[in-house]
Image 1: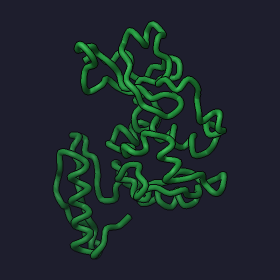
Image 2 (image 1 turned 180 degrees about the horizontal axis):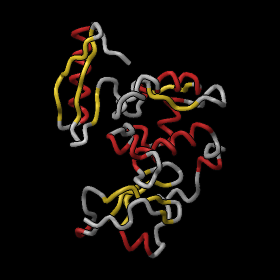
Image 3 (image 1 turned 90 degrees about the vertical axis):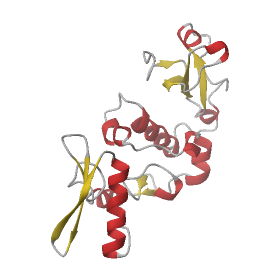
Image 4 (image 1 turned 45 degrees about the vertical axis):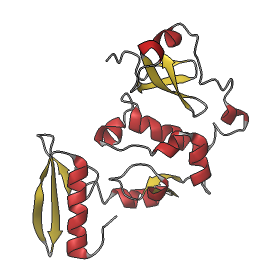
Length: 211
């Protein structure tokens, strides 16, 4: 499947990835995100010839409402870029290790309804558990100090989850330290299984899952 248009911009549309299903008459198409926040599909020739430049919104309704310049919109846009744009300098820390955005938040209006605007200008979007993706249950507006405190829990490993480490082979090892003794929990083919094992061990040894 061709990926020659991925991450390219056509008018207000940024190409995210090839569509999972073909369009009418089996024609190839792409999943795109419009600058207004909506996702849509577009055929290759419509993008390259300039016949499709937006989702059909006609104008950026969030710009008219003064939303595109707000902290909430900037955070929403950056969140998607980190998770889905492979050219982003931070992709390897987010999308590259499986961090994604919940389906509801693919739409900016839904994100705004859930999170609102931050109360203070210095606040940014923070995930409570850095091993999980972006969703209402895992996100809040936090100060730089709060974010730094959260990051210290993960800076001593290579995966973003305490006790889970990425090996040179590409696999993930899970460990837990109890009474100053490090216990190996096993080696796993994927990140999610290693995190699940680590969480189960925390419940077993500590009675709760650490954030």
